[in-house]
Length: 129
Image (cartoon, rainbow, N blue to C red; front, side, top):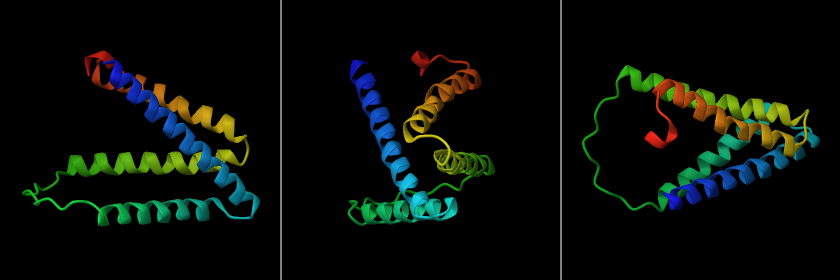
């Protein structure tokens, strides 16, 4: 259990530092005259390129039989992708008006807000997962 808490804390710290670096780059891009759409598109492009490069070095495993996705799964995927994309766009827009450190603190508030939402939706405390 302690190992999982430590691992989770490290992942949150890495996420916060990643968003901190990202916000700094976004601030610099705005200073150079780039728009929010250009910054978002460049982030998407760099992420896609990075994931593509990682897949080139992945070990190939035999492909198991693929089960067709149901409409419920498709809507869940769309909801997750849309919420993540909107979080990035709104974060980039907010960085224009607040400092990077305030933006990071506010963004990390979504961790506990998400935990509360999960508790309400699943009617379980985090210890029961």
